[in-house]
Image 1 (tube, rainbow, N blue to C red):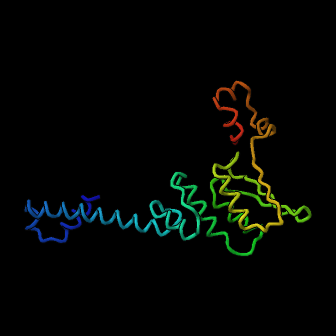
Image 2 (image 1 turned 60 degrees about the horizontal axis):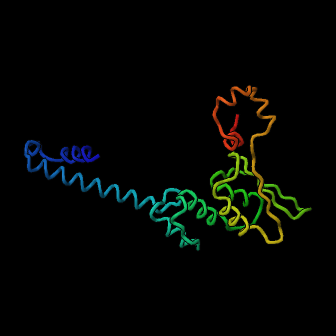
Image 3 (image 1 turned 30 degrees about the horizontal axis):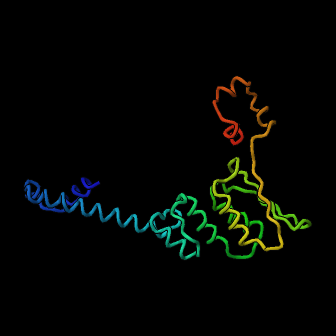
Length: 187
């Protein structure tokens, strides 16, 4: 990138400076510094958005009142912050869906069963249990009224889907998947 900056800087100089080694060295050093400044500014700007924050994520967590856990993967930390930011307002099925979908594996269906005082959240985007289910549970429990039970359901490969794929046992074995990988597989 510094070569492009250096070339751009040369374009602003009179032609007789192009041959000067001293000016060439000066442009090279200035281009490197400008490139570093540009990178620093881009990194700083990224911290203003939860979706791109890295080293500034702890500030977002502090603003949301979330204890920072630097051992947790960044994408999971971002999900917790996003759910907290989305978690204000009247609690409806759409609101619960919005908060839950801020997490990894977050595509869900929300079913309210008023007769049982229950909210059922089914993960349909990816099969299996999300890696940060505890964070999802905390976020949902924080917004759902206490008198409602929250039930989480997860999707796995069903036999009828496997039958519909019309694979033989040899083809299945050739896929070389563990049982857990197969449960999460979509034919």
